[in-house]
Image (cartoon, rainbow, N blue to C red; front, side):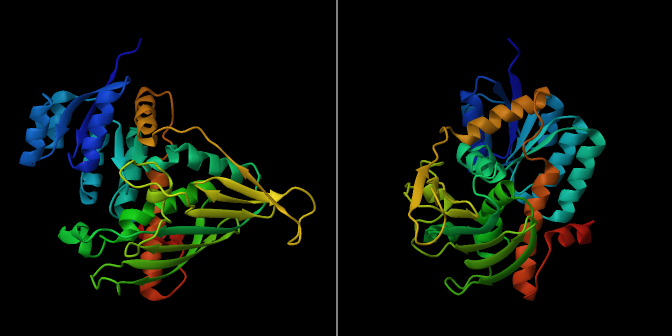
Length: 352
């Protein structure tokens, strides 16, 4: 039996503590330390009888973990990941990979130069529902993909915005929430070539958007629309429809629709619609339910991270791949600001 991986966590906020819990329950690894300068994090580590460090660099030097999970604020992702690369320690970086495409390019260069694996925590790619949707598109079950619909509509509670940065630029649903959905759409449908967008802050009046409407052109030719608002009572979002996180009341509704010349698939309720015989609007539609196996994608992500550290698997989402998702989000913001059609590829070229 191989030795268990020693995994450390930098950042002991909500998601950092979730990672700690997953490590404690995993047969593949054990917790080697926590890095977070806050007094609450120190108390948390001491209560778990776990080594605590105010600085992640001291943790890397003293504990020499096999891997580090970076669950710190976005602006700290780059320096922490660069320190991991310099120390030869593979990292699992929470999304977004860094705070900007320009800083993501610096990380990609360091990963390429050192050969140290960097896995990015777009954990929904590990969800069997998302994998099944990707397979349906890739294997041609829908025919030629023509149209994509994405919805992210719910109401965040008022006390959510008591944290000041959530009322400022960068704290809205585009970068915090939509980035997950953009990554899902890229993973399932392929690259997004062009973006148009409108945003509004009318519902709350904060400096940051509360509502957005996106028009997407995929590299494969399909067109997509995505509607976003965190200010409306509604059941159509991944959080409320997927059942992925038990904290949210599950709704039996779709949040994505993928349509092609041979069929359409609603996700995550996984209903596949097609014609059994000659197609046409007078003919009856048949409905089939696709039923992938159910498991916690965060558990699978941790297993995968340990396999990446051991060299048995390649990162499902590398820093370079995650940079593509971040570029789409930046393209959305620029398109909304300028009223122009923006290419995510151009965003990456300008940042180079």
